[in-house]
Length: 465
Ligand code: NAD
Image (cartoon, rainbow, N blue to C red):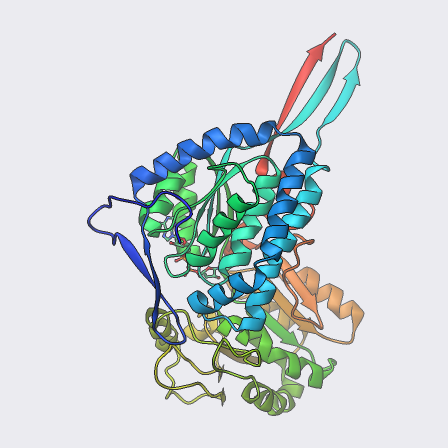
C-alpha cells in the first residue's frame, strides 16, 4: 500500500506501525509502517529537488498535469470511496462525494494556475516587477474526520502554485492518502513531488514542522495541537495556515420557516457522526417557538438512518475509535437522560446514538467541541440575546441562522464572529469560496479564488533602466 519508501527505524516511545481499524466492525483493515524522523528528513530532501523541476515548468504544463491527476482520480472514485468507508466509517454515499471533491479541487486549482500572475509598474527610470514565487516544500497535516477532502484542500493549490507537498495523514486514516499519492504518480507527477508520510503526530508531524526545509505548514486539526504548532513555527517565522475546531451555532428565529429549520437541523450536527468542524452543535431557538421546534426535531432526529456505512441508505456511521467514543461519553453517557436520543447499533463498532441535550450556556457540554453526534439546545429571547449566545465561544468557524427577515439575516450575519455563515441553509464548504475561522478556529483561509496565493511569496524587483 505504501506509496513511498517504507520506514525502517523508529524512536522507541512511538509505535513502528499503526493498525487501521474499520470503525464499523473493529476489524484490522491494514497495518501501516510509521515514518521515522530520519525518513522525514529524506522525504524533505527529495521533495526539495522535485519542487525545483516542478516550479520550472510552464504554468500550462503544470495545469495539464494536475488535470491528468484529477482525471486519474475520476477513474478511481469508487475505489477511494470504498477505502474511506473501511478506514473512516463514512457512509458510502458521502464517501463517493468526498472522493469526487478531491477531483474537483484539483481541477479548480489547475484553472487557477494560469491566473497566478505578477504585475509590473513602469516608472521614470525603471520598472517594478512583482512575482508570485512558490514557497518551496509545504507540509500538509490533516485529521481523520475527512481524510480525502482535507488532504486536497492543501495539496491542490500548493501544487498548482509550484510547490511540493508532504502530506501527514492522521494515524487512524492513512490508506486513502497513500492511495492518492500512488494515483498522483500514475498520473505523471514527478517523483518525490507529492509524498505521504504516515505516522505519529509527535514524530512525523513535529519533524515536518521543525524542519528548516519546510516553507509552510497547513494544519487541520484540534485547537490544542494547532497552538503547539503555531508556537513551534514562530521559531522560524514559518508560514502557517490553521484550520481548527468549532462549536457552531444554529440560530432559529421565531419568524423562520420552523418546519424547514427543524427538518434541516439533524444533518447539520449528525453528518459524519458529528465529527465535523462545521457541525452546528449549539442549537439556539427563540423561546416563543422553542416547544414547537423540539416537537418537530425529535422525529427528524429519529428518522436519521444509522448503521452499516456500506449501505447506500445509511446517513450516519460509527465514531472513529473506541478512544474517541469514550471522550464523547465523558460529555453525555448513553444512559444519561437527554431531550432526544436516536438509535445506534449494538455489538462491534464504535457506535454512539444521536443525542440532543437541553443545557445552560456555561455547561461543559455547551462549551467544548465534542466532535460527536451531540447537540445542545438553548433558548434565547431576542436578536441581541441570540448574537450574544452565538458569540459566547472561543471558536468562530461557522454557523447558520434561520429567518424570513432579510434585514435580520444581514444584521446577525455581520454580528456573529465566524468565518462561514449560512442563512436558511447549513452549507459551509464550497471549493470556490474562501473557508476559515475567526478566533481560535484558525488562521488564514483555504479554498476559493485566493487559495493559490496562500502558497506563494510576493517578491518585488526594481530594474533601473
Ligand atoms: P489532532 O489535532 O489530534 O490531529 C490532527 C493531525 O495532527 C493528525 O495528523 C495528528 O497526527 C497530527 N498531530 C498530532 N500531534 C501533532 C504534533 N505535536 N505536531 C504535529 N502534528 C501533530 O486532531 P484530530 O483529533 O485528528 O481531528 C479533530 C480536530 O480537527 C477537531 O478539533 C476538528 O474541529 C478539527 N478539524 C478542523 C477543520 C477545519 O477546517 N477547521 C476540519 C476538520 C477537522
